[in-house]
Amino acid sequence: MNPLAELAQLNLEPTAKVEVAALIQSLIEQAERDAKTIQAKDVVINAKDIKIGALTYELAYYKRIHFSRKNESLAPLQRDVFEETWNTDMSAIEAEVEQLQDDSPCETVTKPKRPRAGRQPLPDHLPRIEHRHEPESCACGTCGKDLVKIGEDVTEQLDVC
Image 1 (cartoon, helix red, strand yellow):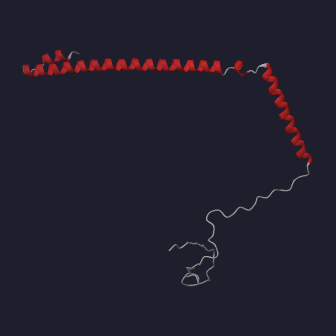
Image 2: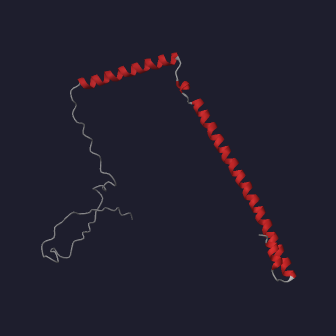
Image 3: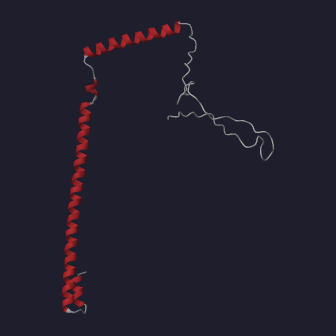
């Protein structure tokens, strides 16, 4: 399918044919440039993916070299020092366990009472003004029974003049 050949078959004025042919030619060239750009980007992306993969494998290789089993082994002198320290620690722990088992059972330790969390009440020597908000009637409006006090809320505010 050649768009320029199909254009020649149409009954158009010669100036219009020239303009359309130039437009078609520029569109074809632009499409070819875009295709080349996309291919170049794909090549760059593939190259980056290959480089990332190579670096990942190289990093894994160096980790295996650095953290391999042979690098974790101790020299004979270090192993002896480690075993001595370990044996000393184990004997100290066993002695402490035996001592705790030999002692009579200890009483349950109670936690000391923690002071009230949040704001502490204001000192008693400061003057106070009480405002009580009581209901208008002492009986329920629907059944007529006396109201029951559930609880109260006390709020203190320091007045600074």
